[in-house]
Amino acid sequence: MLGLLKKLLPTKKEMPALSGRDLYGRNNVGYPTMQISREIDNVVKTQYKAIKPIINQYKDTLFFKWGPSVINDKLNDEQLANLSGRNLQMVYLLLFRDMLRYLSELVTLKNVPENWPEVFAQTVLDNCRMLSDADDKDIAKKQQLFANTERFAVDVPIDEKNPDNTEIPDWTVPIAELIMIPSDMIYKCHRPLITAIEKRKKHG
Image (cartoon, rainbow, N blue to C red; front, top):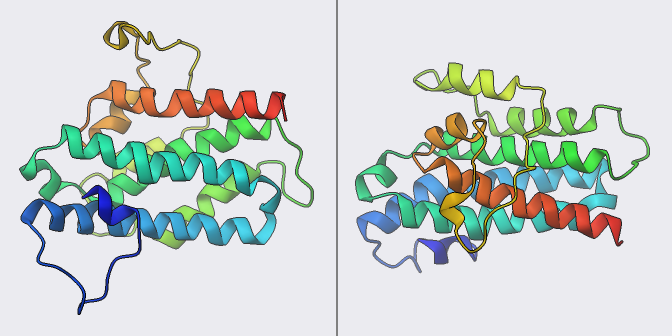
């Protein structure tokens, strides 16, 4: 499954026979991930080229490395088959928007609205049509999560020697439930990237 996210999907003529798990990975992880990544890239081209390296650092690591790795490790075949690509996109967008909120306190951008992280995220949400499926049983939950205006707390350090001892904030729970992974995985993916970006800007 992970290999499918590292390169463009082959054409039908080149497409090898996929196992059930790889097929679910392509449809429920690969395609949705490429769509949200593409929409983020499109928004960056409009007004946010100055922060493109930071956006790519976060997006490429979470969307194409850590996220797929966690999903592949934690979800069994049945869970992967039932994984909603829209839910995965929402998880990525919520974490991505939070990164933008942190970043907005570290950088000053020209010719953008004061609430540019919200505008950016709303544009991606709309272009991906994440909340448009009539049969989406999680739509109310996702609407509530997206309506949150608070930054996610990432103050608690991760105990590198004993990661299981890390106190995981409550905000991770409803986000993790959307994609059926343990809530600590959300925190252990998000916090290190926020910390790395903060260090990068302070020493940049």
